[in-house]
Image 1: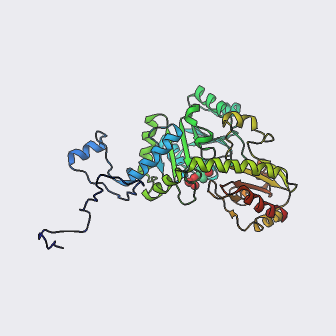
Image 2 (image 1 turned 30 degrees about the vertical axis):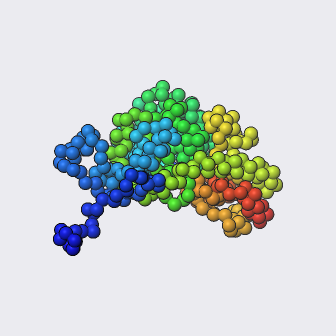
Length: 395
Ligand SMILES: *Cc1c(COP(=O)(O)O)cnc(C)c1O
């Protein structure tokens, strides 16, 4: 193509810089470029050697991931956090980036289902040994530590029984033994608990859940206290392609703007709903750490500073058929095994996250056929009460 005005060769591809004048875009631009052009070979060396800042290839980093990571860093009091393609990518990068054959990891016995599966099935294939302990029992943790133990992975509030880990005890035992503590902070979020402020070494998030908050992106986040750990986690994530796409990072950044507002509202709704459920004859048990009848309420109160979150579970007075009738009687509510969405979602762990366990295994955790987990959203709470009124009356 030739420009008729000056006869110089022209192209529509790539050579026209977008002039923005003296003003700037208010909304973060999405920068989908996979590759970044450097001005010279010397400068490329400087970039790779860290003497100059600059992106090279999107799997290694891009502006939308950097910005999102910096914002989550701010919430967590972290530096150099990494956004990953999913929460499980963050869990995987933290473990496999830091541990190797011959090492040992201790996990809490009620970790997120796929984290448990990683522990049970995958790490062993790479020669990493695993043990599981009850995170409310630091003495059991102390007994499980071996000379080869390199990491303890815990969640502050367990899924779906909402037990509260003895984080102070876990961290004290780990420090004494010189073992890293990694905290999957997805349920509690930095509003409820900031692992680094309490002495933890690694923070993990499924950004998919409350931080992004709209069930339209799958992303994770991992940050380490020690820059040497950060570098190993980053290198593993980049090598194995666990890193995220610009568009998803952009969406998550947008979701993050309203995270504190969504959290406040969803938490207030959860507290109201928990009390309402407790007054319902068809509800045999309510599990919400903010209620005085929760087994770990006292610990939750100190650990979470009164921020009990949006998650609650109930046990209805009925069997599997009654549970099914309840779900059918609430067609407007999303019956879906996720959490942290703006809208309330209802899940039934015996048929989803915990279906792989035997009925006896589920019973040991208190997860009977009438067990429901509720991720409370930001709707008008009276609407939620109307939905559950219909649901409970169908039992
Ligand atoms: C959902 C979840 C994960 C996994 O996150 P993905 O983004 O779905 O990969 C890990 N830990 C916890 C506690 C979760 O709830």
